[in-house]
Image (cartoon, rainbow, N blue to C red):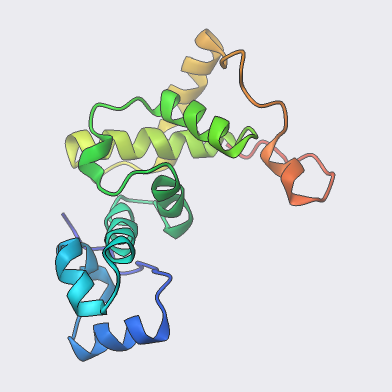
Length: 165
């Protein structure tokens, strides 16, 4: 797996110091097991597992810390756990957990991580999946239990967000 140089991790000052002390770059964090990170970071097993997951998910092209955090929120801690999943179903599950519907671009990111987990093909970015998502949604729509509130309504602005995807 190719290392991305712009990995961002929500590390404490002590965790950052432990990485520096052990001469570990953020781009290399995903190459360690959670058990190794637990020792290196002096972190709890849960914290080490989360940090490793956040780093690994960001190795996927065009995936950043916010979406990596969404995947952990969904209960995923490794790309291999996303193999053979369905990006549309993951989107619907995510919306139910959040209790609002999300920006369509997020579905493209779900589709990308599933694709990447199955192929390790780093040639695609999330926006490459917009046509697939649009075709699927025009043919299948959304489930009847889709939340009624939109993501931008949770921001407190009251304004309708533009469809950017």
